[in-house]
Length: 107
Image (cartoon, rainbow, N blue to C red; front, side):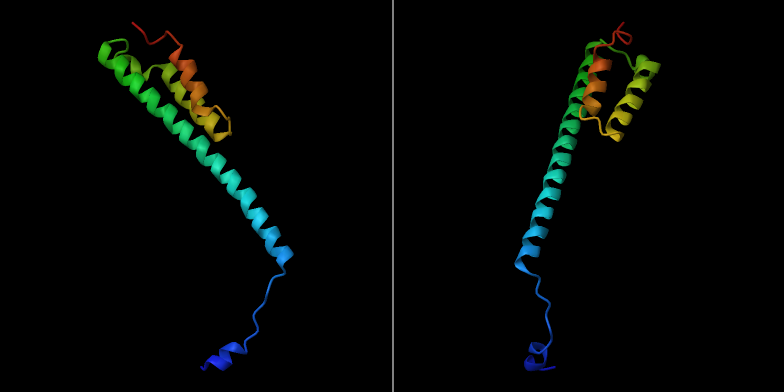
């Protein structure tokens, strides 16, 4: 196939107005995606904080491994999962604060 044959193929060109509209839609979607990423990063940070606090509590004796699987901790996990699953902006953080303030697991 020669260059002149390829050059003769029709190439659709989208009007500039439509191109601008498409770019604006992509920018709106990008904002939503960046917001979701930011929320996920905050949740990951909260989980890491909880992990560090949990390790500290276990090492210092504020919590024992025997108490780690109590009903309140299972409730915590379910609450955290449902908060995140249903789009609660605070998600894991709220659940973390609720369980962290709970005195049930402390000796």
